[in-house]
Length: 572
Image 1: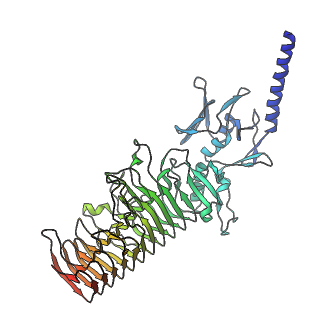
Image 2: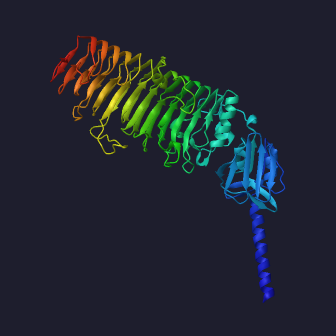
Image 3: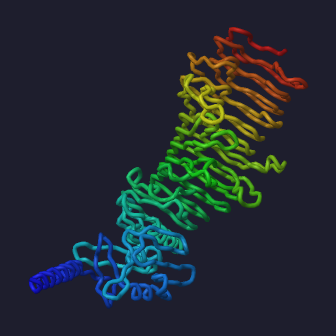
């Protein structure tokens, strides 16, 4: 009986060994490194969809110094600027001490340590591709990859899939895309991303450097934050000169606080024909980005010649209070507050974009352009323009300007809120204005012309000029502001003027609301002429103020066409 049991055990053991060897044989894989076949002491094999190879052979081929720690059971490869450590039988590896989850761990087979080939290759900056028909894994040094013209534009470009990116909506493509971007920058070339969903680890700071063009196939080429990774600051960082990004969808998937960052000291940047969507704040109160500003595009200072064109920016939502408010922007021009004082972004063109669903009402603006140097009494015109954009559902404002020398021309602002726009921060549940303002101006040398503000809702101020400090040399002309006739908001004004010196308000059409034009603070050296004001339930032009020690000096009012129920002109 014992002999029989022993025989059965031997048979099962041999079946297991044969089955394992057969599985290993069925998984025979050839590895080519720069088109030359590699030889290994243990043949490469596939397990759980990953190719494993002996660690020493692959590390040394890639120029690493190799270390084995018997006590800790870890293998490590080191070279300048890069250190990769894999503990045996652990689902976590470390790249420059950062933990990264593995699909399959390193392990010991036939007394040889084997490691996942794709993980090593991609984190070392090599491209890797798998041919299931030939069962060949091809690893290429990025310098040996060549561009082609196999893209919809027929131009010479590198294909991101040459560098191992999958675009399958499952694979983490961050490292493959970063490797591709580095090569394209070095070669002053173009990178093409075919249709697909490329998952990005938003903590990895995917960066586009100088002399790089990137284009995709429009809405079907998606760079999306990987949902099972940690929350990140930026999905894509633009840092350098002469960079162009077009025909991509950049989706933060609520896993990044900012989608696109144009970093300090960058210039000649174009973002066009893209979709930029879905930014929010971290749910971890210990993180800095728990309550920081949410933004679709952030442009830091010391930058120049930046263009955002024909791009849709949507769904930027703040959910945690920042000094009592919830702050979100479609486009945010500011300074890098972690550095020294920067000049405001100069020669910026924000044109032909569709910016919508930015909120909440506490402080959700479509565009906020600020120059913090104004508060330091350092003034310089930015020579920038915001034109021909469309705004919808920007819960507080469409445009807020606190930078000098900006032209705001030909924009369309649609107010879809009607007695249903609520605060979500410290005044949660309280009704906000349908929109606080369409356009707010807090800096000198500004032109607001040929804009259309309309919709079912009203504005506390359709166009608002100044409040905290004196603003000078402002032109407001040829704008159309029509508030919703059924809005029940009180105290609304078409054009609301605060502390202003040298201003012109001419040839505007204002309809509905409480007042057409109101100079509610000190104003001087102004012209109000040629405006058409139709206020069935309010007044026309009001120069009265309820504030003490405020004045009106040298203001010319003529040739306005006013139909108002309360008064035409109240000079008080």
